Length: 98
Image (cartoon, rainbow, N blue to C red; front, side, top):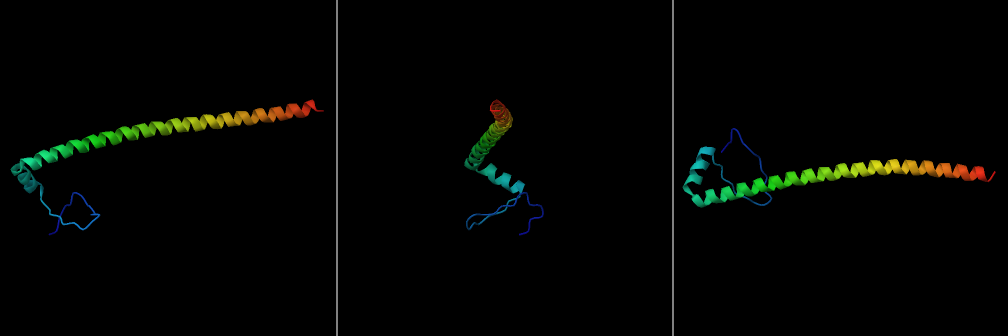
């Protein structure tokens, strides 16, 4: 069977048999099987929750990266100030020995 307009492409990790149903036929099957409909609803809700959790984790990770960048920038600035202070101290110590 050839699909004119596939909605998704998948690759199975193990040997798999698949069937193809068009949208109308799929809706008919789901309408005739209330347990399947209930399971699909549960899985849909679970998927929505997982997507929400992923977004929250991405936001938290982004915030962590911003914080790390700020720390790295501040650390670099502090390192530069410390280096200048060390150079000044060396100059002062050298001047005092003269």
